[in-house]
Length: 358
Ligand SMILES: Nc1ncnc2c1ncn2[C@@H]1O[C@H](COP(=O)(O)OP(=O)(O)OP(=O)(O)O)[C@@H](O)[C@H]1O
Image (cartoon, rainbow, N blue to C red; front, side):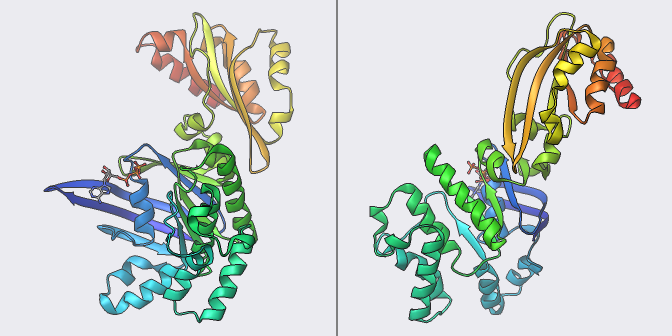
């Protein structure tokens, strides 16, 4: 539904070039909620603003719902109307709501319809329908100043839906809200995604947002996408930074003569007592150093950091036992690996032995 290819944005600021986007290839599938995360300055806002051409990309292409927006923008002033029409099918929600204080709630939702030239009565009907959809049917005549932050964001969402968009872009839509209100706005986004088949591309710095509503996610750093995929796929990817950030694990990474591994459970494996079976089968003491469980897309997913007695080479078979049962197992570190660099290689070699043994 959204594909960016080689998307690059260079700002010229005080005589020097700042590369905010550096060849971003992103693919957001129809009907999914896709979250982009990354530190401040990673290029998230630039990405979302380039996707709807609020910001003109320096190079690369943006295709939304089969239309190459960059090509439309490149065709000069006569393409303006066409580009505006294409953009009206892309809704945008902002962190600070951007409501007009001089207009009522209904007036704010009607604004994009006015710009599209929709006649008055039809505008009012549509605005009231959208306010009903976001749970604010009773607030049509209220003024933005009379609303809570969560209600303001609902108005922002209703306004974003005015042009019957297929795509909604959300720029930190919940960052200014408290946790409970965040939850209800995220639930609303999830409902709209399901009810309307709306594709949502959101940027956030909150991993909880990704955990609770995203089907897929990408991690940005220095203007590049460094990881991307479905959330469940990322969780099953050894070494995934996003998986680590989604499920941070406490506990010391190393201990003398101990092997520490991070185990990711998903799907059916969460329900099975695999750790106790591991302990019984090999007669070993397994210590749980840290754990995090959550429900993603209605399925339980979790990560656990466990410690096995003995060096990594002694634990090839128990680790193989877990992997054979569908768990993702990553070496969090061994005493040797953490202590010196020259032992890193045997650890990698031993990991390979496990891979080969599967
Ligand atoms: N209009 C601009 N002019 C010059 N430089 C800009 C402009 N907008 C963004 N930048 C720079 O581009 C880089 C990426 O910024 P961007 O706002 O896209 O990142 P971000 O990941 O959204 O950060 P944040 O989470 O803080 O909003 C930063 O170095 C920023 O300073």
